[in-house]
Length: 219
Image (cartoon, rainbow, N blue to C red; front, side, top):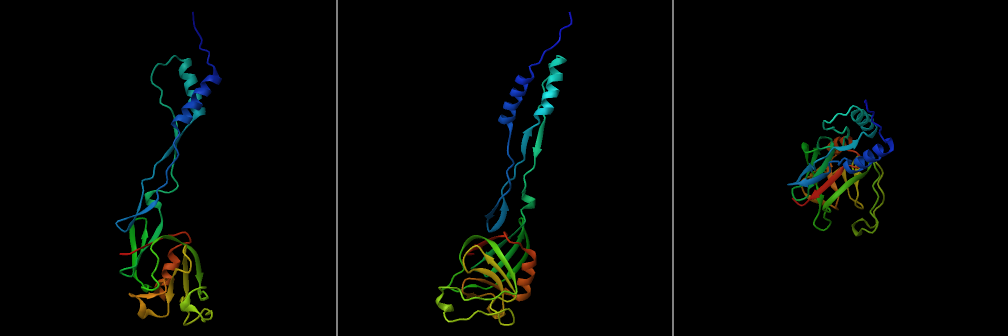
C-alpha cells in the first residue's frame, strides 16, 4: 500500500526558526590596536544566517522522498564591514623622536619629521582621532593659556602659526598643522601641537580623513 508523508509545516518552520537562532553568528569587524608601535588589526570573523526558506523546501522534499542521508543546512555568509586588509589609514606620532608615521592598515606609507610639545607644554599621549580639517585656517589664541595671553587672532597668510592646513584632534587645542618655522622641526618646541613643514602638512591633509585614528606614543 503506497504511503504518503504528511508534514506539519508549522512545526517544521518552528524547528528551523530555533535552529536559525541557535546557529546565527554576527560578523565581527577588525579593529585597530597598537602592537609594538605598529597599527595592527584584530581578526575579523564572517557571520552566518540560516536560509530558513530554502531549508524548509529542501527538508520537505527530503522527508517526502524518505531520504535518510544527513542533510546539510544552507547558510548565508555575512561578510564583516571591516577586515584586516580594509582598516584604512592611521597615524602614529612618536613624541620622543619627533616623527609622524602614516600607515595604511599595517603598511607604513610615509614618515615625516615633526615638532612636538615642549616639556612645559607636552603633546598628550593616547589614542585620538582627527575631528576637523581646515584649509588656510585662522589662528585663535587658546582660551585660558597663559602663553597666549594678549595675543590676537591671525588670519590666513604668511606667518600664520598654523601654516596652510589644520587637522584638529579629539583633544582640546591640539592638532597637526604646518608651521612657518621649519627650523623647529625635529625638536620639542610647540605648545602641544604637532608641527610639520608646510608642503608635508598639505600632502598629509590630502591623504587622511576626518575619523582617522591618531596614536601618540612616548617613543
